[in-house]
Length: 419
Image (cartoon, rainbow, N blue to C red; front, side):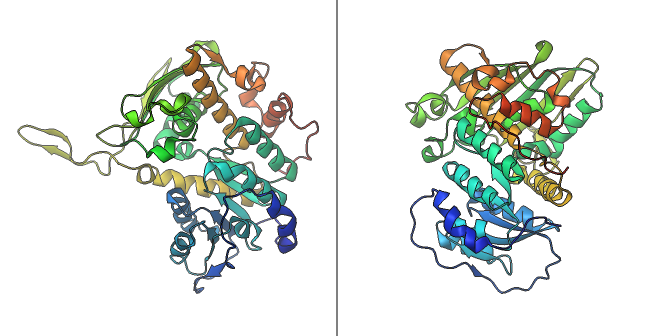
């Protein structure tokens, strides 16, 4: 059951909305709703900001979760929000994100808007005591990310970073083999991430480049599989596919990159990413240990194979879109976060995880620029090795130590959130 108060939301609007810096838009109409035909069994009420591709994926995942109820969705283009809401009877729509956050029936907010609006939307939701699920990144720079994590802790709300690959059946099976000791002590992790085709120029511009907008998932996965924080990163990047981006600044000019992440005792993770693989979406993982190896194959829509006189192989190409490839992961992460809200437990992927993933991406960009190994402590002083054994600490205790080590971090800790 939800523990958040739903009253006094309208009064909070006047004081909180000013903090939200969104793109200029016309004065929004009042939120509207399709006819209600569903019975409410008191699930968690969810408001969704953003009716683009990823917003619709999360809306679909929420609609299949029995303990969640999509209440309202927003989009600056009202017709998109309306089209999404009308698919789910009783759901409201609006062009104003503040109406989503302030809606009295919304207990948790799913932020699926452009990255530059995340920090302000997190601030408003946290001030109103609403739990937050945020698409990566939490914010567009490290300082804003840390501020967002601190505020959510101070307000006692959960902040989950959407790193959905942790919930993919393939990757989670590799993690289980490592955790259960099947492969012995992990030595090397290899990750491959290739998109079917390059994204539009508009997507690349201002997005921070291939390490932040693409490889951040793989960087986080390397940390997830290793089960500890990284020490150093070496990266190199190039423009091999789309010359349209070749003159963009820094890592935005790369469509191909290789990254090596160094962990304790010489263990490494090697990552290769490319914005184009003509055969389809390619996502694979491998972990070599002292006793065995575990690996995943690429995912296909089916397992059918064709045998002819001149061809033997899969009948169809791999998935050609991340949303179809990771549909099971999106559903699983939704259930996991809703469960954490109902059980008052920590978010399964915390704000700390989002901060460290972004720091790894920043370190990779710096390494590619300067062609040298970059210690993570250069980006985050918290990762200077002084937190030896930190993976074994409770997430909240790790985050407390982590934030205290940062310049500008809060000087006092909030009251503990009930576990």
